[in-house]
Length: 232
Ligand code: B1M
Image 1 (cartoon, rainbow, N blue to C red):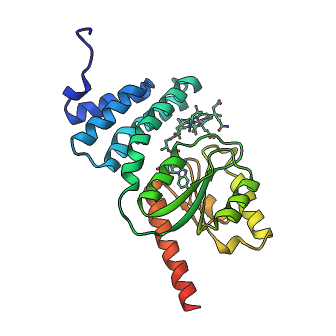
Image 2 (spheres, protein in one colour):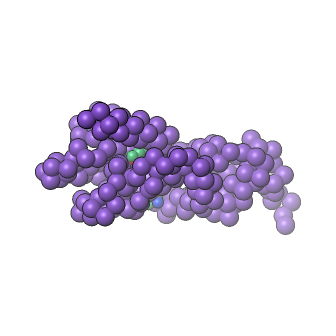
Image 3 (tube, helix red, strand yellow):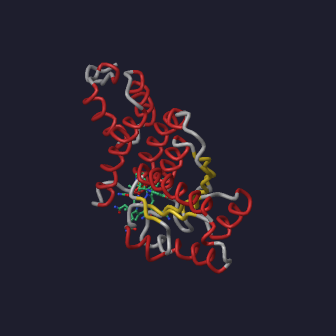
């Protein structure tokens, strides 16, 4: 061991979190995994590990990607390191014992392979008591339709991270309209380049800024739908 090797378990929380940002930046899977476990062992709640250590680390990666300091291969390593941490947190976030809320089909739209944000939304929705059917990435409208047919969800969630792929959400929603089934579902959209106005323009029920907002919005809209059905 070299003199300057960092022992993660010996770092105080704030320095460990900083170090995890650096390790995520450098795409160091095992270190991110170890850091995640250490924070959990120290009693951190999974949501705080997720947001403060992992999501914040990815935000920094995103800035340097945007500024041309990091490139695709490096960002891929960071994404994989992030996923390692998320995999540890997934079961912990899911086992909250929350009462069943409904079913959601979620996928990243056609042409888009970004899935970290979508996965995170799926994890948080599961934790809030929703059954989540994850369609993965690069989904053409046919995939959503097949999943609707098979799973009869309450909610359809779409994710897009590229300005070139976000318009595809309208293709999906317009197809639902053409088939006369649009109003059978709550449609939620999200992803970094979207905003409220875009959500309205494509005909979604709501734009969700982040996973926590997605959970709150989903709960609220499902409740509203049930109340409407009960009073009909
Ligand atoms: Co991409 N990429 N990328 N990338 N990438 C962005 C999105 C970009 C903004 C980077 C930049 O330039 N600053 C830029 C898009 C620019 C634009 O369109 N205006 C970009 C680009 C250009 C590209 C490529 C074209 C690069 C290239 O090849 N030259 C290429 C495209 C590939 C494709 O999809 N066809 C590409 C590839 C990649 C990687 C494969 C290397 C990797 C993805 C790995 C993976 O996902 N498995 C990658 C990554 C990691 C990023 C950044 C750095 C990080 C995205 C991320 O995971 N964020 C991203 C920079 C950025 O976003 N600032 C960037 C963390 C995640 C937790 O946040 O996804 O926003 P986010 O999710 C949030 C909310 O948005 C929301 O909740 C989540 C959690 O709170 N949310 C939802 C998301 N989906 C939701 C769905 C919902 C509700 C809420 O449904 C109900």
